[in-house]
Length: 259
Image (cartoon, rainbow, N blue to C red; front, side, top):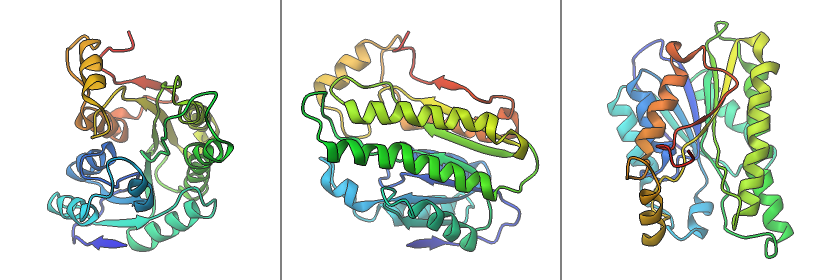
């Protein structure tokens, strides 16, 4: 666990999951929120990166922490295997102990291993649902139970995807995530918490082969891929007071590729 402290008072706390690499969407969201006046707790799970093609980015937690501190934020990084059903409560406990109560929960974590209808294993299917759906529900549940901020100030935001073909367990589990988060817009209304889902479309954070990158850019009206910063700016708005009237929505921030 890495921690960086700042002396600025009265900054709200955001918990951003899935901040394992400096080039990821989670890291971009953390930077944007830090620049907007939030303290930022974040999670990562290094063994996931280690088994993916891009591998572990050495020093990523410290590098992100230094960037957040430079933006005035207090920050803490927590290693958490969200496939463990006990992990969400432990994460919230640690964040509250180190930074204070969480006012915004931004879920950028995922399990994503390509496989289709015929070759997905039961083990892979179960792990995708454990990380992408069950852990997200447990994080939302813990956040909802603990939230005591000003009515209307709480925020839940999750990143989703509609990619299913050739990526069955990922897409199916993200569909479950959508329903969980959108339901919380109603179920947590009495606590003054808004909840939205963001579909950023194809964003190259190092996983795209050249052919996929070229095809996605060619099919996007603006002729380019989305960037982590594109998603981060929308999340930042949704977390702001100005974004408080947007609630219970699945928002496409994909440059029009889905149109």
